[in-house]
Image 1 (tube, rainbow, N blue to C red):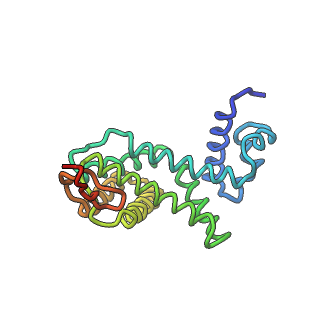
Image 2: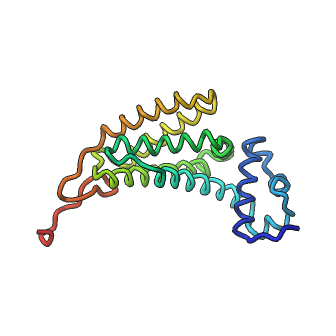
Image 3: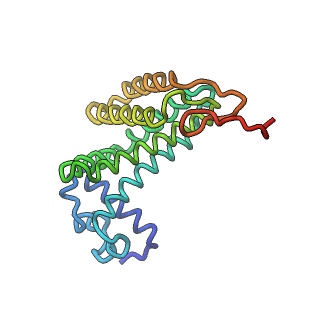
Length: 217
C-alpha cells in the first residue's frame, strides 16, 4: 500500500469524489466508489474523514477556494474596476474550460441536496458562493481604489447568478468565446455600480467610505 501523508490523502479523496460525482452523479458517489477511484483502502477514508457528508462539504469548500484563488491571484488589469472584474471572470472561465468536472460536481451536489431538503445543504452551499463573491468584489474595489455604490450582498448575488449562467451555458455548448462575451457584459453591468474613491480611502464591505475622524486631520 502507498505510504502518503494525510494531507495528500485528503486531496486525493476530494479529487476522486469530484471525478465520480461528475461522471456518475452524487447517488453513485458512495464511500466505496470514491476510495476505489482513489485507489485506497476503505480504512484510509475513515482515517481522514469522519463521514461521507464531511467529504462532500470538503468538495464544495475546496472547489470554491480554488476559484477564489484564481480570481484573486491571476494577472489582473487594475486600470479600472471593469477591467479587474473582467480579469477575474475570465480566470473563472479558464478554470471551467480546463476542469469542467469540478463545476459538474458542484451542480450535482447542489441539486441532490435540494431534493433531499429544501432548506438544507444547497442553501449553505450557495451562501458560501455569495460570501466568496463579496470578498472578490471587495478585493477588486480595493485594488482599483473604487467603492461600490450598491449594497455588496446584492452585487455578490448578481455575480453568482451571472457565473451560474455562464457555467450552464458553457457546459451546454463549450463556446468559450461566447462565455467571454457574457463576462464582458457582466463586468460592465457590475462596474456601473462603482465609482472612484475619494480622500477618505477605500470602501468598506458595506459599500460606504469610512467616516472621517477629527484625528485624521
